Image (cartoon, rainbow, N blue to C red; front, top):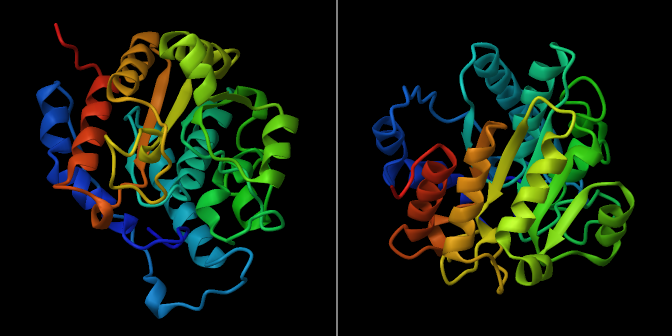
Length: 292
């Protein structure tokens, strides 16, 4: 899906990740992989944009609702949901599905959001009206009801159980949401000063405290564009190759990872599919691959 993005191309991200050998490499780690294919998404050329402050809202809500059902069903079968994007709007569907899964067990979930952007705009604050800048806000109950109510209960996840890692591009009004809602945010300065090990360990602490575990949402633009050029909205000064792998390895070691998604891979902007190849590498590290 690229309905939530301002630049076309991320709808081809799932194919790029498959071409990069995701299924085969997961199988090599010993996993039984069941690829359910792509969730059907209408193309923007055939649709009205709709509200300028929340572009393609009905279509995105419909797609995320369908995704949430698939994710919940997989989790209920004790499978590990791995979602491929697409723009970051898909996270609303993933989180909603996992939230319903845990809510039925009277348990809560955590969320680690690795991203250059906060994604905490609302239609009222967004300068672009692109919904891929709003999914985290919607997950914690801020935004259009079509999106905030996808999990049934609102919010889908409590703000104090949410952690953003790698933040370096925040809109002015959006900054108030980041500071005022109770989410934990680690900017690139924190990573520079403290190192990725300290940051990701604290992130895991917040996301696992009082929860059944956490969902990990990786926007590939969190990684520096020198390593991941094929993304929807590149921002200089990002996470390095080894920092990204270390974060995934520590997440795996924690034992709290319940689901994973990789989003915003844009093959149109990429070089020989290297961003998708890195995305697959990071997934492998998160799922247990080790050097020795």
